Length: 89
Image (cartoon, rainbow, N blue to C red; front, side, top):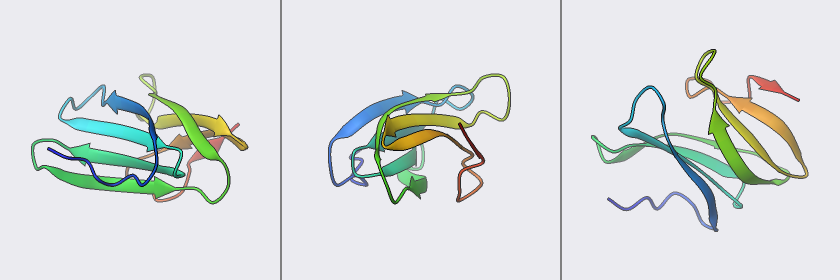
């Protein structure tokens, strides 16, 4: 399967902790994408206006949000069911 959603370098690829058939990626193109490997399609995407994503992890203790950090951006928390960030530090 090809994952063509990003237009610039991918900085992190992360399998979902709860659903291993989901893969999350972040990129210096200011976007996060989540892919369903079973369905072979992009499930959801998030984009920021300023900064770039350099790393990402996933919370295990709460709603399984993705947590991103980067250059010129705060630490952001993302829920796959919500378009905007759910929290920031």
